[in-house]
Image: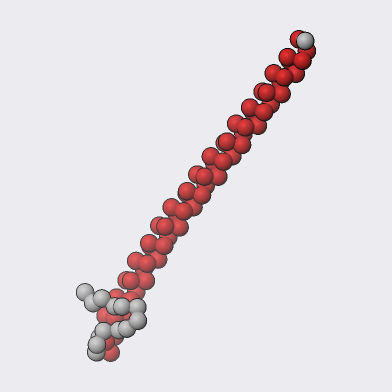
Length: 78
């Protein structure tokens, strides 16, 4: 397998241009697959984080409501 560095092509690459093109295509597809995988992972982490933030906000709202209700009940009993 020919390793193609980003800044140069192998010596005498013009003798086998199709094999170089095939290797470049494989490298590009591998890079695209890797970036797609990483993008999916970042998206899932983001949506997971947003889910937990929303859940925490709802829990806080419920706690504040409960405190208000308890305070009102205590004021009525005084």
